[in-house]
Length: 184
Image 1 (tube, rainbow, N blue to C red):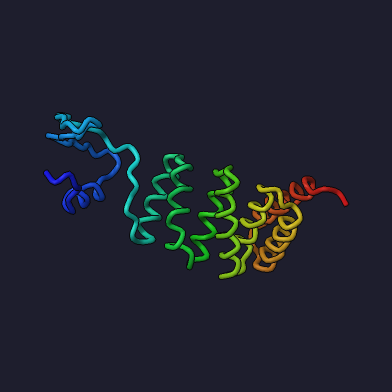
Image 2 (tube, rainbow, N blue to C red; image 1 turned 180 degrees about the vertical axis):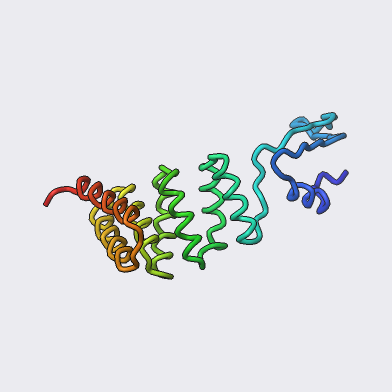
């Protein structure tokens, strides 16, 4: 009646999830000529609700759902918009960065993953996050830095006696990086 959205309506809108069906009844719209028009009933289905993510568990469940459905666009959007939830955890920073490395090609989004991967190294310097960082650097064309971090990953992995297959995969990546680097 007031032409304004009430708090009850706002709460109902915020609670919507993908797949929910919404009906608005008895809508009266004011036309450009100043006359009121009865719009009847409008209905629609929510196909991509912006979720209310409050905890790291909420985010991880959502990211897991997106990854299982190969929905990497929404995966990257959710991660970028909620990065504050995982910025303290080196493992999550590295895992999300690795998924960006594997599935995201948008350079602007890869810059987020690069930042997260570097922060992961700053929190805990290990072979896994050095390898991720090197792969991301390679993907965006920073071959010299990629070479440095892949070598570091291999050295740490060997010192920790990581399995030979993993070390061999990193050495193959290092060769790929070296072949892409401009010759001096």
